Image (cartoon, rainbow, N blue to C red; front, side, top):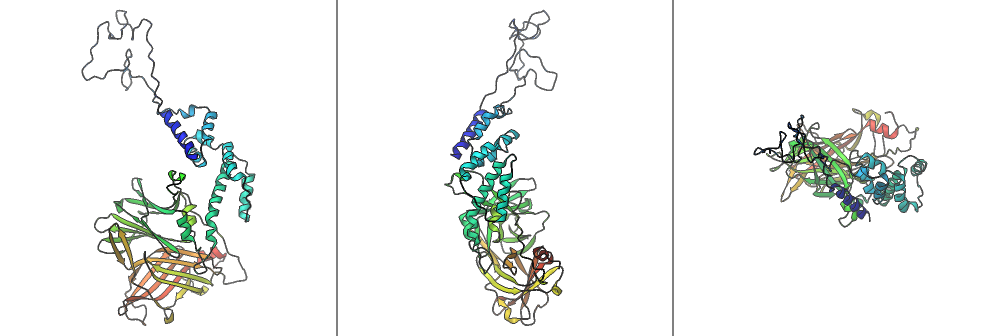
Length: 520
C-alpha cells in the first residue's frame, strides 16, 4: 500500500515535468504587417525587409530567427529571440492549492512523508501537518496500551503528552516506532555472560537484524565511494570486519568513515528504500599519521589510530583491503542508533557511590583479555580481583598488574605465532608480528568500564626484560585517552613460541574519577 502511494506521487511529479512549454504569442499589426513602417510609409510584410518591399536574402551560415518582425536587441543576447521560460525551471507543484497538495501527501507512508518534507519549504510545512501524522499514529499505536517500566520512560511519555507544539504527532510517531523496534532486540541483550560481562546474544542479534558495516572513502575533491564489507569474523567479544579496496589509491583518500547499516531482506517491500546509516568512526588521513606495522612479499600494512588497518600493495600505493575490529560492548546500539553525522552517545549510568569507601574505584576489577587474528585465538585469559594503590599512580594512570614479571607461575605461552592473515580475491598471505587485542575491563560491580578492540604489534627490545629466560625479548603496547596496555614477551627458540611474562593495564585517573565521583 505504501509503495503504491509512493509510485503515485512519483508518477504525478513526472507528469508535471512532461507538460510542454506554452508557446509565446507574437502580436501582429492589424494591417497584416509584421514590422514597423519603412521609409516610404509601407509596412514590411512577412517576406519583406526593413527598407521596403524587397526581400532580404539571408547570408549563408547565418542563424535564422524563429520569430519574424522583431528588432535586434541592443543587449548581448541574440537578436529577435523572445525570453521563453522553460517548464523545467517552473515549479508547477507549488502552483497547486494547499488542499490538493495535502490530499496528495495523505497517500504517503511515514517514511515517504519524512523524505518529502526535505524537498522545499512549502512541502516541509505541509508534510509536518499534525492531522496527517495523527492519522498515521492512531492506527498503529493508538490502540496499544503502553505502560512505562522505568522512570525515564515515564518522563518521555509525560513530555509527549504535554507537548502541544507543532509537529507533536510526528515526534510521537517516531518515538513509538523507535521504541517498538528497539524492544525486539533489547530483550535478547539482557542475558549477560558472567565471564565477559557482555550480552551473550550480541552476534545473534547482529545477524538477525541483518546489520552490516560500510566504509565511505572521501578524496581531496570531496568525491565519495562506498565499500560494503567482504568478510566478517565473529569472536566471543568482538568482530573483525574486512573490506576489499579495489582500485582506490591510498594517497587520494582524505577521510575514512565507518557506518553501521541495517539492510532489509530483498523480498521485503522496505528493501527499495535507502538504508539508515549510523556513524561509528570517522578519521582524517591527512591529520592522522599512519604507522607501518608489518609487511610481506605483497602487502604493506598501515595502522591508523584509533584502530584501522589499511593493506597497501607494495610498490603501487593501491589499497588492497581495510580491516577494523569492533568490540561487542554497545555495538548493536552504535550500529543502529547513531545518525549519519553523529555517533551513538552511550548514556551515563554511574554506580552507587559510597562515601565511606576510601578506595572506591581502585579495586575489584575483572579483566577478560584476548589476543587473536582473523582465524584463531593466540591467547585468552580471565583475571579477577585486580587492584591498585594510590601510590602506584604514574603519569595520571591507575596501574593494574595482571601478570607479574617476577611471578613465574603467572607466565603463559602463546598458542601459535603472532601473525595477521589477509586475503584479496585469489591472493592471500600473512603479515608477521601483528594481530588484534580485545580487552574488557569490568569494575567491582561487574559493569563494563573500559572496552577496546584494536590492532597491536610487537617490537624487539635492545635490552633483556627478564633474566629467567634466554631468548629475544619483545614489547607489545597499546594506548588511547582512556588507558594503556603493556606486554612483555620472550621468544623461546627451542619451543619456537612466544612466552608472555608481563601484562599491565593502565587506566586514566580522569576516567576513574568521572565514573566513581572521586578526586584521586
